[in-house]
Image 1 (cartoon, rainbow, N blue to C red):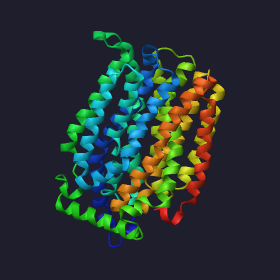
Image 2 (image 1 turned 120 degrees about the horizontal axis):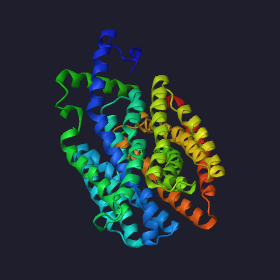
Image 3 (image 1 turned 45 degrees about the vertical axis):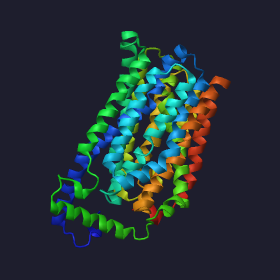
Image 4 (image 1 turned 60 degrees about the vertical axis):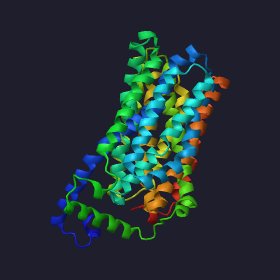
Amino acid sequence: MPSANVGSVTPDAADPIKALYHKITWKLIPFLCFCYLAAYLDRINIGFAKLQMLDQLHFSETAFGLGAGLFFVGYILFEVPSNLVLEKVGAKLWIARIMITWGLLSTCTLFVSTSTQFYVLRFLLGAAEAGFLPGVLFYLTTWFPTYRRGRIIALFMIGLPLSSVIGGPLSGWIMGHFDQTTGLRGWQWLFLIEGVPSVLLGVLTFWALPNAPKEAKWLNSSEQTLLEGELRLDDAEGKDSKHGFRDGFFNLKVWMLGGIDFSILLSAYAMGFWMPTFIKNAGVTDTFHIGVLTALPSVAALIGMLMIGASSDRRRERRWHIIVPFWIGALAMAASPFFTHNVVATVALFAIASAAIIGAVPVFFSLPATFLKGRAAATGFALACSLANIAGLVSNSMMGIAIDVTGSSAGALWFFAGCLLLSSLLVVALPAKLVNR
Protein backbone atom coordinates (compact mmCIF):
# COMPACT_ATOMS: atom_id res chain seq x y z
CA MET A 1 0.00 0.00 0.00
CA PRO A 2 1.40 3.41 -0.88
CA SER A 3 2.66 5.38 2.09
CA ALA A 4 -0.18 7.90 1.86
CA ASN A 5 -2.62 5.14 2.81
CA VAL A 6 -0.60 3.46 5.54
CA GLY A 7 -1.58 5.88 8.27
CA SER A 8 1.20 6.13 10.83
CA VAL A 9 3.78 4.29 8.71
CA THR A 10 6.69 6.65 8.05
CA PRO A 11 9.01 6.60 5.03
CA ASP A 12 11.66 4.96 7.26
CA ALA A 13 9.22 2.18 8.05
CA ALA A 14 8.57 1.48 4.38
CA ASP A 15 11.79 -0.52 4.07
CA PRO A 16 10.75 -3.15 6.65
CA ILE A 17 7.42 -3.54 4.85
CA LYS A 18 9.16 -3.93 1.51
CA ALA A 19 11.62 -6.41 3.00
CA LEU A 20 8.78 -8.34 4.62
CA TYR A 21 6.87 -8.84 1.38
CA HIS A 22 10.07 -9.63 -0.48
CA LYS A 23 10.73 -12.38 2.04
CA ILE A 24 7.17 -13.77 1.90
CA THR A 25 7.21 -13.70 -1.89
CA TRP A 26 10.42 -15.71 -2.14
CA LYS A 27 9.28 -18.21 0.49
CA LEU A 28 5.89 -18.95 -1.07
CA ILE A 29 5.60 -17.95 -4.72
CA PRO A 30 8.37 -20.01 -6.41
CA PHE A 31 7.08 -23.22 -4.78
CA LEU A 32 3.44 -22.48 -5.63
CA CYS A 33 4.46 -21.53 -9.17
CA PHE A 34 6.16 -24.91 -9.64
CA CYS A 35 3.04 -26.61 -8.30
CA TYR A 36 0.85 -24.75 -10.81
CA LEU A 37 3.29 -25.58 -13.59
CA ALA A 38 3.01 -29.28 -12.74
CA ALA A 39 -0.78 -29.06 -12.46
CA TYR A 40 -1.29 -27.37 -15.79
CA LEU A 41 1.23 -29.62 -17.53
CA ASP A 42 -0.68 -32.70 -16.36
CA ARG A 43 -3.86 -31.05 -17.59
CA ILE A 44 -2.76 -30.13 -21.12
CA ASN A 45 -0.14 -32.76 -22.00
CA ILE A 46 -3.02 -34.70 -23.48
CA GLY A 47 -2.72 -32.26 -26.41
CA PHE A 48 0.73 -33.66 -27.20
CA ALA A 49 -0.25 -37.25 -26.49
CA LYS A 50 -3.02 -36.78 -29.06
CA LEU A 51 -0.43 -36.60 -31.86
CA GLN A 52 0.24 -40.32 -31.37
CA MET A 53 -2.57 -41.84 -29.34
CA LEU A 54 -5.42 -40.97 -31.73
CA ASP A 55 -4.02 -43.20 -34.46
CA GLN A 56 -2.81 -45.91 -32.10
CA LEU A 57 -6.06 -46.09 -30.09
CA HIS A 58 -8.32 -45.28 -33.09
CA PHE A 59 -10.00 -42.27 -31.43
CA SER A 60 -11.85 -39.67 -33.51
CA GLU A 61 -11.31 -35.94 -33.03
CA THR A 62 -14.76 -35.76 -31.40
CA ALA A 63 -13.92 -38.58 -28.96
CA PHE A 64 -10.68 -36.84 -28.03
CA GLY A 65 -12.45 -33.50 -27.56
CA LEU A 66 -15.07 -35.13 -25.32
CA GLY A 67 -12.43 -36.91 -23.24
CA ALA A 68 -10.34 -33.77 -22.88
CA GLY A 69 -13.48 -31.89 -21.89
CA LEU A 70 -14.70 -34.43 -19.32
CA PHE A 71 -11.81 -33.35 -17.12
CA PHE A 72 -13.79 -30.19 -16.49
CA VAL A 73 -16.98 -31.99 -15.49
CA GLY A 74 -15.17 -33.50 -12.51
CA TYR A 75 -13.38 -30.21 -11.90
CA ILE A 76 -16.61 -28.20 -11.87
CA LEU A 77 -18.55 -30.60 -9.61
CA PHE A 78 -15.89 -30.66 -6.90
CA GLU A 79 -14.49 -27.12 -7.09
CA VAL A 80 -16.61 -25.40 -4.43
CA PRO A 81 -16.62 -28.36 -1.96
CA SER A 82 -12.85 -28.69 -2.34
CA ASN A 83 -12.21 -25.03 -1.56
CA LEU A 84 -14.49 -25.13 1.48
CA VAL A 85 -12.55 -28.14 2.79
CA LEU A 86 -9.27 -26.24 2.23
CA GLU A 87 -10.61 -23.28 4.20
CA LYS A 88 -11.46 -25.66 7.08
CA VAL A 89 -8.45 -28.04 7.20
CA GLY A 90 -5.73 -25.68 5.92
CA ALA A 91 -3.78 -25.22 2.72
CA LYS A 92 -0.88 -27.52 3.63
CA LEU A 93 -2.93 -30.73 3.95
CA TRP A 94 -5.41 -30.07 1.19
CA ILE A 95 -3.04 -28.82 -1.50
CA ALA A 96 -0.77 -31.80 -0.78
CA ARG A 97 -3.76 -34.16 -1.17
CA ILE A 98 -4.77 -32.52 -4.45
CA MET A 99 -1.31 -32.74 -5.98
CA ILE A 100 -0.57 -36.33 -4.98
CA THR A 101 -3.90 -37.68 -6.27
CA TRP A 102 -3.81 -35.78 -9.56
CA GLY A 103 -0.20 -36.84 -10.19
CA LEU A 104 -1.07 -40.51 -9.68
CA LEU A 105 -4.19 -40.31 -11.85
CA SER A 106 -2.35 -38.49 -14.63
CA THR A 107 0.28 -41.25 -14.64
CA CYS A 108 -2.46 -43.89 -14.88
CA THR A 109 -3.49 -42.46 -18.27
CA LEU A 110 -0.66 -44.50 -19.80
CA PHE A 111 -2.82 -47.63 -19.29
CA VAL A 112 -5.75 -46.30 -21.34
CA SER A 113 -6.76 -48.53 -24.26
CA THR A 114 -10.43 -47.63 -24.87
CA SER A 115 -12.39 -44.42 -25.14
CA THR A 116 -14.41 -45.33 -22.03
CA GLN A 117 -11.25 -45.68 -19.95
CA PHE A 118 -10.06 -42.37 -21.35
CA TYR A 119 -13.31 -40.65 -20.37
CA VAL A 120 -13.31 -42.07 -16.81
CA LEU A 121 -9.69 -41.13 -16.10
CA ARG A 122 -10.11 -37.61 -17.42
CA PHE A 123 -13.18 -37.13 -15.20
CA LEU A 124 -11.31 -38.43 -12.14
CA LEU A 125 -8.29 -36.23 -12.92
CA GLY A 126 -10.56 -33.18 -12.96
CA ALA A 127 -12.16 -34.19 -9.65
CA ALA A 128 -8.70 -34.69 -8.10
CA GLU A 129 -7.37 -31.31 -9.24
CA ALA A 130 -10.53 -29.39 -8.29
CA GLY A 131 -9.82 -26.64 -5.80
CA PHE A 132 -6.12 -26.16 -6.49
CA LEU A 133 -6.21 -22.82 -8.33
CA PRO A 134 -9.01 -21.14 -6.31
CA GLY A 135 -7.50 -22.63 -3.17
CA VAL A 136 -4.10 -21.05 -3.81
CA LEU A 137 -5.72 -17.74 -4.78
CA PHE A 138 -7.68 -17.74 -1.53
CA TYR A 139 -4.54 -18.72 0.38
CA LEU A 140 -2.63 -15.74 -1.09
CA THR A 141 -5.30 -13.35 0.23
CA THR A 142 -4.25 -14.38 3.75
CA TRP A 143 -0.70 -13.15 3.06
CA PHE A 144 -0.93 -10.20 0.66
CA PRO A 145 -3.15 -7.08 0.75
CA THR A 146 -5.28 -6.16 -2.24
CA TYR A 147 -2.89 -3.60 -3.71
CA ARG A 148 -0.13 -6.21 -4.09
CA ARG A 149 -2.16 -9.06 -5.51
CA GLY A 150 -2.04 -8.25 -9.23
CA ARG A 151 1.73 -8.69 -9.34
CA ILE A 152 1.79 -11.58 -6.86
CA ILE A 153 -0.90 -13.52 -8.72
CA ALA A 154 1.02 -12.86 -11.94
CA LEU A 155 4.19 -14.29 -10.40
CA PHE A 156 2.29 -17.36 -9.20
CA MET A 157 0.45 -17.86 -12.46
CA ILE A 158 3.51 -17.74 -14.69
CA GLY A 159 3.42 -21.46 -13.97
CA LEU A 160 0.68 -21.58 -16.61
CA PRO A 161 2.73 -20.34 -19.60
CA LEU A 162 5.86 -21.96 -18.18
CA SER A 163 4.11 -25.32 -18.38
CA SER A 164 4.08 -24.89 -22.16
CA VAL A 165 7.48 -23.20 -22.41
CA ILE A 166 9.05 -26.15 -20.59
CA GLY A 167 6.45 -28.80 -21.27
CA GLY A 168 6.19 -28.24 -25.03
CA PRO A 169 9.78 -29.11 -25.95
CA LEU A 170 9.96 -31.68 -23.12
CA SER A 171 6.79 -33.44 -24.24
CA GLY A 172 7.92 -33.51 -27.85
CA TRP A 173 11.33 -34.88 -26.85
CA ILE A 174 9.84 -37.58 -24.58
CA MET A 175 7.47 -38.78 -27.27
CA GLY A 176 10.19 -38.91 -29.90
CA HIS A 177 13.05 -40.24 -27.76
CA PHE A 178 11.28 -42.87 -25.64
CA ASP A 179 8.85 -44.27 -28.23
CA GLN A 180 8.90 -48.09 -28.09
CA THR A 181 11.34 -48.13 -25.15
CA THR A 182 10.55 -51.16 -22.93
CA GLY A 183 7.44 -51.73 -25.01
CA LEU A 184 5.76 -48.41 -24.18
CA ARG A 185 4.78 -45.86 -26.80
CA GLY A 186 5.96 -42.25 -26.61
CA TRP A 187 2.61 -40.94 -25.35
CA GLN A 188 2.64 -43.50 -22.52
CA TRP A 189 6.10 -42.37 -21.41
CA LEU A 190 4.78 -38.81 -21.52
CA PHE A 191 2.16 -39.49 -18.84
CA LEU A 192 4.56 -41.56 -16.76
CA ILE A 193 7.41 -39.02 -16.67
CA GLU A 194 5.29 -35.87 -16.34
CA GLY A 195 3.07 -37.25 -13.56
CA VAL A 196 5.94 -37.86 -11.13
CA PRO A 197 6.79 -34.17 -10.33
CA SER A 198 3.23 -33.53 -9.13
CA VAL A 199 3.45 -36.35 -6.60
CA LEU A 200 6.87 -35.21 -5.36
CA LEU A 201 5.75 -31.59 -5.01
CA GLY A 202 2.66 -32.78 -3.15
CA VAL A 203 4.86 -34.52 -0.58
CA LEU A 204 7.10 -31.43 -0.28
CA THR A 205 4.03 -29.29 0.46
CA PHE A 206 3.98 -30.62 4.04
CA TRP A 207 7.35 -28.89 4.67
CA ALA A 208 7.17 -25.91 2.30
CA LEU A 209 3.74 -24.44 2.97
CA PRO A 210 2.61 -22.96 6.33
CA ASN A 211 -1.16 -22.83 6.76
CA ALA A 212 -1.08 -19.20 7.92
CA PRO A 213 1.42 -16.42 8.72
CA LYS A 214 1.37 -17.31 12.43
CA GLU A 215 2.65 -20.80 11.55
CA ALA A 216 5.54 -19.54 9.40
CA LYS A 217 8.72 -20.33 11.33
CA TRP A 218 10.69 -18.09 8.97
CA LEU A 219 8.79 -14.99 10.16
CA ASN A 220 9.84 -13.52 13.51
CA SER A 221 7.31 -11.99 15.91
CA SER A 222 7.87 -8.41 14.71
CA GLU A 223 7.39 -9.46 11.08
CA GLN A 224 4.18 -11.29 11.96
CA THR A 225 2.90 -8.21 13.79
CA LEU A 226 3.78 -5.97 10.84
CA LEU A 227 2.00 -8.31 8.42
CA GLU A 228 -1.10 -8.47 10.61
CA GLY A 229 -1.21 -4.68 10.67
CA GLU A 230 -0.97 -4.44 6.88
CA LEU A 231 -3.77 -6.98 6.41
CA ARG A 232 -5.97 -5.19 8.96
CA LEU A 233 -5.52 -1.92 7.07
CA ASP A 234 -6.48 -3.70 3.86
CA ASP A 235 -9.58 -5.15 5.53
CA ALA A 236 -10.52 -1.68 6.77
CA GLU A 237 -10.21 -0.29 3.24
CA GLY A 238 -12.56 -3.03 2.04
CA LYS A 239 -14.93 -2.60 5.01
CA ASP A 240 -17.99 -3.39 2.89
CA SER A 241 -16.64 -6.81 1.91
CA LYS A 242 -18.87 -9.87 2.43
CA HIS A 243 -17.76 -12.76 4.64
CA GLY A 244 -20.28 -15.66 4.66
CA PHE A 245 -20.88 -18.65 2.39
CA ARG A 246 -24.13 -17.17 1.04
CA ASP A 247 -22.32 -13.88 0.36
CA GLY A 248 -19.93 -15.74 -1.92
CA PHE A 249 -22.40 -18.11 -3.59
CA PHE A 250 -25.42 -15.86 -4.11
CA ASN A 251 -23.48 -12.85 -5.33
CA LEU A 252 -24.22 -11.47 -8.78
CA LYS A 253 -20.71 -10.08 -9.15
CA VAL A 254 -19.22 -13.56 -8.57
CA TRP A 255 -21.45 -15.00 -11.30
CA MET A 256 -20.38 -12.14 -13.57
CA LEU A 257 -16.74 -13.01 -12.86
CA GLY A 258 -17.51 -16.62 -13.75
CA GLY A 259 -18.86 -15.45 -17.11
CA ILE A 260 -15.77 -13.33 -17.77
CA ASP A 261 -13.43 -16.18 -16.87
CA PHE A 262 -15.51 -18.53 -19.04
CA SER A 263 -14.57 -16.40 -22.05
CA ILE A 264 -10.91 -16.36 -21.02
CA LEU A 265 -10.78 -20.14 -20.70
CA LEU A 266 -12.57 -20.81 -23.99
CA SER A 267 -9.58 -19.26 -25.74
CA ALA A 268 -6.91 -20.40 -23.27
CA TYR A 269 -7.93 -24.05 -23.53
CA ALA A 270 -8.23 -23.87 -27.30
CA MET A 271 -4.62 -22.72 -27.39
CA GLY A 272 -3.42 -25.01 -24.59
CA PHE A 273 -4.96 -28.25 -25.86
CA TRP A 274 -4.94 -27.70 -29.63
CA MET A 275 -1.80 -25.68 -30.33
CA PRO A 276 0.22 -28.80 -31.23
CA THR A 277 -2.50 -29.71 -33.74
CA PHE A 278 -2.54 -26.18 -35.23
CA ILE A 279 1.23 -26.29 -35.74
CA LYS A 280 1.15 -29.80 -37.16
CA ASN A 281 -1.57 -28.75 -39.62
CA ALA A 282 0.63 -25.81 -40.66
CA GLY A 283 3.18 -28.31 -41.94
CA VAL A 284 5.47 -29.20 -39.02
CA THR A 285 5.74 -32.96 -38.41
CA ASP A 286 8.65 -33.48 -35.98
CA THR A 287 7.27 -33.70 -32.40
CA PHE A 288 10.24 -31.87 -30.87
CA HIS A 289 9.93 -28.99 -33.35
CA ILE A 290 6.20 -28.83 -32.64
CA GLY A 291 7.05 -28.61 -28.93
CA VAL A 292 9.50 -25.77 -29.45
CA LEU A 293 7.05 -23.77 -31.57
CA THR A 294 4.27 -24.39 -29.06
CA ALA A 295 6.44 -22.78 -26.40
CA LEU A 296 6.70 -19.43 -28.21
CA PRO A 297 3.12 -18.21 -27.56
CA SER A 298 3.61 -19.26 -23.94
CA VAL A 299 6.71 -17.07 -23.65
CA ALA A 300 4.58 -14.20 -24.93
CA ALA A 301 1.90 -15.07 -22.34
CA LEU A 302 4.48 -15.03 -19.55
CA ILE A 303 5.69 -11.57 -20.56
CA GLY A 304 2.11 -10.35 -20.89
CA MET A 305 1.16 -11.57 -17.41
CA LEU A 306 4.07 -9.83 -15.73
CA MET A 307 3.66 -6.56 -17.62
CA ILE A 308 -0.14 -6.29 -17.35
CA GLY A 309 -0.18 -7.39 -13.69
CA ALA A 310 2.51 -4.89 -12.70
CA SER A 311 0.85 -2.07 -14.65
CA SER A 312 -2.52 -2.79 -13.03
CA ASP A 313 -1.05 -2.70 -9.50
CA ARG A 314 0.96 0.46 -10.21
CA ARG A 315 -2.10 2.32 -11.50
CA ARG A 316 -4.58 0.66 -9.14
CA GLU A 317 -6.77 0.07 -12.18
CA ARG A 318 -8.31 -3.31 -13.01
CA ARG A 319 -11.10 -2.99 -15.58
CA TRP A 320 -9.27 -1.56 -18.61
CA HIS A 321 -6.33 -3.85 -17.93
CA ILE A 322 -8.77 -6.66 -18.76
CA ILE A 323 -10.88 -5.05 -21.48
CA VAL A 324 -8.11 -3.87 -23.81
CA PRO A 325 -6.27 -7.23 -23.74
CA PHE A 326 -9.59 -8.95 -24.48
CA TRP A 327 -10.05 -6.84 -27.61
CA ILE A 328 -6.51 -7.48 -28.84
CA GLY A 329 -6.74 -11.21 -28.11
CA ALA A 330 -10.10 -11.54 -29.83
CA LEU A 331 -8.78 -9.93 -33.02
CA ALA A 332 -5.75 -12.22 -33.09
CA MET A 333 -7.89 -15.33 -32.49
CA ALA A 334 -10.35 -14.31 -35.20
CA ALA A 335 -7.54 -13.74 -37.72
CA SER A 336 -5.74 -17.06 -37.11
CA PRO A 337 -7.99 -19.30 -39.31
CA PHE A 338 -6.95 -17.30 -42.37
CA PHE A 339 -3.31 -18.45 -41.94
CA THR A 340 -3.68 -22.13 -41.06
CA HIS A 341 -0.98 -23.23 -43.54
CA ASN A 342 1.53 -20.54 -42.57
CA VAL A 343 3.61 -21.58 -39.56
CA VAL A 344 5.06 -18.13 -38.89
CA ALA A 345 1.70 -16.37 -39.02
CA THR A 346 0.02 -19.07 -36.92
CA VAL A 347 2.62 -18.86 -34.17
CA ALA A 348 2.71 -15.04 -34.28
CA LEU A 349 -1.07 -14.62 -34.03
CA PHE A 350 -1.40 -17.08 -31.18
CA ALA A 351 1.54 -15.39 -29.45
CA ILE A 352 -0.36 -12.08 -29.58
CA ALA A 353 -3.55 -13.77 -28.38
CA SER A 354 -1.71 -15.51 -25.53
CA ALA A 355 0.09 -12.36 -24.39
CA ALA A 356 -3.20 -10.45 -24.29
CA ILE A 357 -5.73 -12.99 -23.02
CA ILE A 358 -3.58 -14.95 -20.59
CA GLY A 359 -1.75 -11.75 -19.68
CA ALA A 360 -5.00 -10.37 -18.24
CA VAL A 361 -5.63 -13.43 -16.04
CA PRO A 362 -3.72 -12.22 -12.93
CA VAL A 363 -5.61 -8.93 -12.99
CA PHE A 364 -8.89 -10.81 -13.28
CA PHE A 365 -8.08 -13.05 -10.32
CA SER A 366 -7.30 -10.05 -8.13
CA LEU A 367 -10.98 -8.98 -8.39
CA PRO A 368 -12.92 -11.39 -6.10
CA ALA A 369 -10.98 -10.47 -2.97
CA THR A 370 -11.77 -6.77 -3.50
CA PHE A 371 -15.34 -7.43 -2.32
CA LEU A 372 -15.16 -10.84 -0.56
CA LYS A 373 -13.37 -12.01 2.59
CA GLY A 374 -13.02 -15.24 4.56
CA ARG A 375 -15.44 -18.03 3.68
CA ALA A 376 -17.16 -15.79 1.13
CA ALA A 377 -13.82 -15.39 -0.67
CA ALA A 378 -13.16 -19.15 -0.59
CA THR A 379 -16.63 -19.80 -1.99
CA GLY A 380 -16.47 -16.96 -4.51
CA PHE A 381 -13.08 -17.99 -5.93
CA ALA A 382 -14.25 -21.59 -6.29
CA LEU A 383 -17.65 -20.73 -7.76
CA ALA A 384 -16.18 -18.36 -10.34
CA CYS A 385 -13.63 -21.02 -11.33
CA SER A 386 -16.35 -23.70 -11.49
CA LEU A 387 -18.55 -21.64 -13.78
CA ALA A 388 -15.57 -20.69 -15.92
CA ASN A 389 -14.31 -24.23 -16.33
CA ILE A 390 -17.46 -25.25 -18.13
CA ALA A 391 -15.42 -23.65 -20.92
CA GLY A 392 -13.06 -26.61 -20.84
CA LEU A 393 -15.85 -28.97 -21.88
CA VAL A 394 -17.32 -26.50 -24.39
CA SER A 395 -13.98 -25.47 -25.90
CA ASN A 396 -12.59 -28.96 -26.46
CA SER A 397 -15.89 -30.43 -27.65
CA MET A 398 -16.52 -27.54 -30.08
CA MET A 399 -13.01 -27.79 -31.49
CA GLY A 400 -13.27 -31.55 -32.01
CA ILE A 401 -16.70 -31.35 -33.63
CA ALA A 402 -15.73 -28.36 -35.81
CA ILE A 403 -12.66 -30.19 -37.16
CA ASP A 404 -14.55 -33.47 -37.73
CA VAL A 405 -17.56 -31.82 -39.40
CA THR A 406 -16.01 -28.94 -41.35
CA GLY A 407 -12.35 -29.89 -41.50
CA SER A 408 -11.47 -26.51 -39.94
CA SER A 409 -11.32 -24.95 -36.48
CA ALA A 410 -12.42 -21.54 -37.83
CA GLY A 411 -16.02 -21.59 -36.57
CA ALA A 412 -14.98 -22.48 -33.04
CA LEU A 413 -12.20 -19.86 -32.90
CA TRP A 414 -14.53 -17.13 -34.18
CA PHE A 415 -17.08 -18.07 -31.52
CA PHE A 416 -14.41 -17.86 -28.80
CA ALA A 417 -13.29 -14.43 -30.06
CA GLY A 418 -16.90 -13.21 -29.98
CA CYS A 419 -17.27 -14.38 -26.38
CA LEU A 420 -14.24 -12.30 -25.39
CA LEU A 421 -15.79 -9.19 -26.91
CA LEU A 422 -19.11 -9.82 -25.17
CA SER A 423 -17.49 -10.49 -21.80
CA SER A 424 -15.71 -7.13 -21.95
CA LEU A 425 -19.19 -5.65 -21.36
CA LEU A 426 -19.40 -7.60 -18.09
CA VAL A 427 -16.07 -6.10 -17.05
CA VAL A 428 -17.43 -2.60 -17.70
CA ALA A 429 -20.42 -3.44 -15.48
CA LEU A 430 -18.17 -4.04 -12.45
CA PRO A 431 -18.11 -0.88 -10.28
CA ALA A 432 -14.77 0.91 -10.70
CA LYS A 433 -14.76 2.15 -7.09
CA LEU A 434 -15.12 -1.42 -5.87
CA VAL A 435 -12.50 -3.23 -7.94
CA ASN A 436 -9.90 -0.52 -8.58
CA ARG A 437 -7.96 -1.01 -5.33
